[in-house]
Image (cartoon, rainbow, N blue to C red; front, side, top):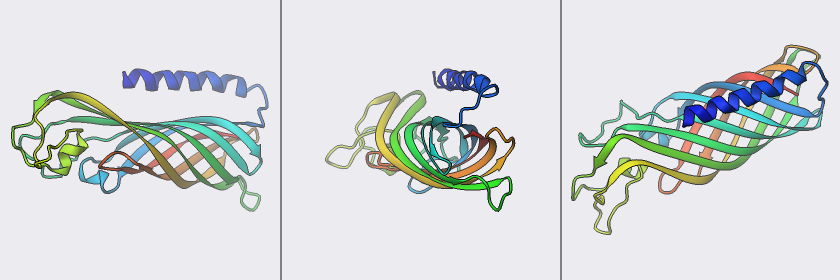
Length: 220
């Protein structure tokens, strides 16, 4: 399902690019790219480095300010270098975000083709956990942060509740901020960009924190 959704977003983005080659959309902002996501603590205790995909569209307020809506996907694979209980579940986690962003940018430094920008925003963060097969937590297993990450609950006595888990999702609000640089490719508004952005989602019990580094193309 996740792959189908990302593919659909890519196809829609490609369809939007076609008319831009023939017309001047001076107020239209668009970006698409992908790269590598690095988790930070506390997220880094449970997952490792993975890929990301980002696409957005919006409006140029003026030549130095833009607002966009962005969708981002980032993988959150289990951290194989973290010592886990032998009976711990194994699976995968995907992070999906829908955010509103404000970008302050200077598209030409000293008359060159290089530019810089700062970006910040916030919105909806959805973390979906999926275990490869049904997993039953052994009775009277002591609570550990690892189990909270996968969505299990604890009893008042401090023990993990026994239940079968196949998949679970959790939503939370979140914020982000970062910076990037651009290289103008054409006089029509197309730019190559590299961006690094810090994300913090207020997920229950264990926050979701990561820094995606994204490389792609912008139009504005």
